[in-house]
Length: 83
Length: 393
Image (tube, rainbow over all chains, first blue to last red; front, side):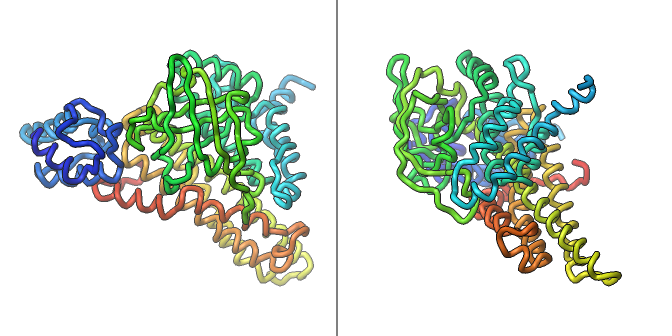
């Protein structure tokens, strides 16, 4: 999952720094993630993992770092398995 | 004066109305020469309206955004420029109140602001960023306990008349353009060199000149939170809501003038319906829609304030964007209707039905953060956001 997220981030993130140099916990907004790019990232994640982000998770916190994204996506996948 | 009478006299609305009387008296002169509404702002200070949002623990009154919006609308009916200066100041104060509580310096500044009624301006716009305040070119330089900042600020509303300015910048020399902080500079800690004149169609009294800002202050005056958070959690909502309240005030006064015109015509017409009567009914309908939209926005904000996740959610941003879009466009329709109703008496300056100033002031609404930019942001969010279609939700 971490790899897929990093791949997407490289493709749509438009960051001024190399994604490979970012730590999992690094603040993506501070690294230059724009709100437009973050939406592109969400769309890419929905497609890649065949999920839909519920409105309650569509906030800055859920997408603040690679680790946060992993957590958000896992949370949705787990909730689906449980259902 | 009896105690109940004194209490009524000291209510927020009574104080706002007294300021509005002063603002109304000078509104045409302020507009005509494009000068700062000094008399109205002095009256705000005398009535101690400048510090109302500061919590009581720090010497203010802890006024809510809803109460402040009411003051904005009262002032907006008298002089839009004065009302806008008040609104912009309160937007800066909301950042202080919502995001400064954890820092000792900012708590002290709240006390000082309430005590001395300090007027705070904002320097978020910069040459070269293309109007997007969530980007900065300039960077703050921190050396030991001191910070220094130079900014080519293309707009600082009432900058030359403020007691303090909150300035955005990149957080350090190496930071990305979106990695921003905001710093409070007090008068005496900065110099302003005027670079651009504010000579505009309307809102002439906000004196939103451009300046080369140079400041040096203790680095504790930098807000401890990233500007991105401040912008999303307090500025977005308070800007759209308080601006809308000012605009509502302009439109409400226009409808009032149109109604006075129709009434006078009806008295003379002796039993027949004057031609503007139907249009007045339409204008009153639109004014109510405008009011309903703003009130619903204020309620959404009050609810979201209790839950920080909601404040930074897309649904909330979209709702606030929609309030701004709707009110900035509706006021133009309303004031134009009022102008058609009043006819040449509305078009002319210096009559009791004059609407030129209202119309010119109202035209700024679509441009204060361009509606096209806001539509663009909303359309991006709608690609992923799932709307709540319930009536009460």
